Image (cartoon, rainbow, N blue to C red):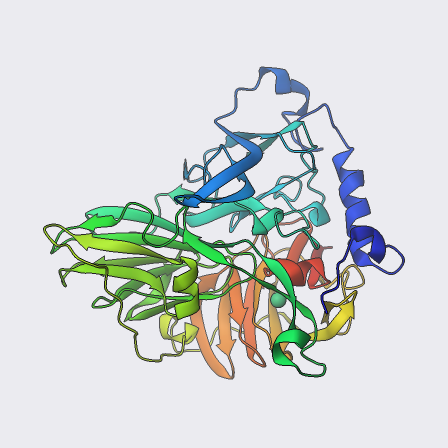
Length: 474
Ligand SMILES: [Cu+2]
């Protein structure tokens, strides 16, 4: 049976309410001053000319002829404008919120002060409904980053990362891809989510009885497979694809039949050991920069390995010059994704301190929705998750003791992947790491960006239901 949830229903016991109260409180700070509390520009907003403007507004998005979804987007497009920003040069972005609800933008993968990072849990102010705000920061490090809404969605599957509020941010000079003939930006997204009871689907008792999000359509950028412009290539070209999984909750696997992906960067950071692979795996929020040698003329589908995802629209046609006919798909062989293939095989240096983290599910824990815990606690009881001192190196030794995937994300820092299921590695730098069901991973980071720092699962429903904690500096 499907349980309908409202935020009010959760009031007595919930961190959701507490998070929301914080949201409202933060949103009421400096309503008329479009800047963060410590922003030096706060007093001068009338005279500041922003380098970039993003306007949040409702959008009727035509994914295919006649197929329209109602969503929210930046500047009326999905994705929002690709922001290409020079490394380290201070910029000001003005966000105008033309919706009826407070919102906030997170600059994912960047070192940004806590009050401008775009997470209310870190103290970034909300952009009030009908209001605007200036964000000022110096983008770093270089590479493929992105920006997206970072508010709660709760039961509302049109908000936050369920919506079209995402866009690429490329901090230049980005990864050296060598010579390439064209660059293609593809952001994957799933649309038209509904809450579905796993009890109905699996007919099973707990632990699989919680509500999950299921979708009925998917796209690369703003079009479903077969309804956008094809990627037009010529034999012999090298094409650089910047791929982003901008789904709120779905992990994806991608292939381009007859071709292989040479992975040069993950989450925007050059990998120590570039590898060529037939299948790419991207959890929610992960990015991959890949080069494809166009050496197999035809008309092909670059799309989801999972047939259901392709049927929903996850794919784009790759069309060689002077080739025609129906786009072809061939199912690639089974292949496990192994992060350590892209890292060095030696061990990373020892950290100054180690923290063990266990992630668990309370099935149907609240109003039918699954609750999530870190070491037995849910946000905000998880705080502080870890207290760090500037300059020290910390290891998060994580155990996913649940049957779901969790792409965990650390804000405002880049971490080094140091162990995957007992296999040591080094040199692979990321900001989001997927922990498959019942798996272990270790990541190290240097506390080099003082300020409250959010750690959370990037699945929107998991973070909304407790899977978050704060790293704080002494
Ligand atoms: Cu999760």
